[in-house]
Amino acid sequence: MMQQYSIADTFGIPAPASMKVEGFSPAHNPYVPIKKAYVFRKDHLRDVLAFLGSANGDGLNLTGPTGSGKTSLLEQVAARLHWGVHSVTGHGRLELNDLLGQYMLADAGAMKWIDGPLTLAVRLGHILLINEIDAVDPAELIGLNEVVEGKPLTIPQSGDVMLPHPKFRLVATGNSQGAGDQSGLYQGVLRQNLAFLDRFRLMEVGYPEPEDEMKLLADIVPSMPETLRESMIKVANQIRKVFIGGQDGAGMLSVTLSTRGLVRWATLVATFKSAPNALAYSLDRALTFRAEASEREAIHRIAKDVFGDDWQV
Image (cartoon, rainbow, N blue to C red):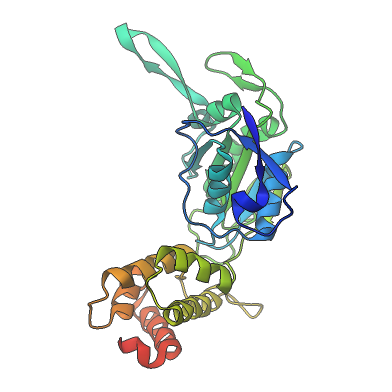
């Protein structure tokens, strides 16, 4: 069953009361993502809702740096609309048959067909979410071309042919635009087939604005002083600038403090608040233990400059 939802009430953004979006009626659907604290960005939300409302034979490809919130954006929209999501992480050995399903041994030695994530999403009108799609062999992804356009899905193993549910959607996330990794930071990224990419709308998802991350941290660690949260976000944004680089060349860091990492840092500070330097102690465990020694020192220097005397708290 479908239901209309108020955009303002559902997503917590300013919008006229008359603006509504269609979703599924609440039900005990195990495929609906768990609703979590999330601050929606108006432009991103508009694009996702437009796609879910009418795909017009397109998929949706969310691109952006690691940890910028590509997957969580889609999942949290779906959570509030009670829209089922079948999430798959792409890798070099992922095959189309893994998405379609397989025959498995059932009771009394009989073979039973088990739907894969693509078949389930097509059948139920759910979202198939392929994360890190640019790590998948492009020859396998070509098999999705027709179903993205709304054409029947054929299952070679069983001979079944099914028309996609009108609410079926295909969404992909990745760190490149399908042209391969030019930075050398994302190992395993492959150049994708142009005909496949041409079937997707594109969305760039960058890191949130400071005020959005402030709202998020306030929800997750409300006991943390506001000034401390502000400084943590300043540190995160300075690290991101050095990581991403600019027109003069690639960034100078191989790690970055994503929104996910920022939340981890904040929660660890609350957990280890009795440590001699809770900020530094938690930053190591949230991020810098993954970095080279020189990078770790540079990140701590950034943090010390931002926090000043508070760095020793």
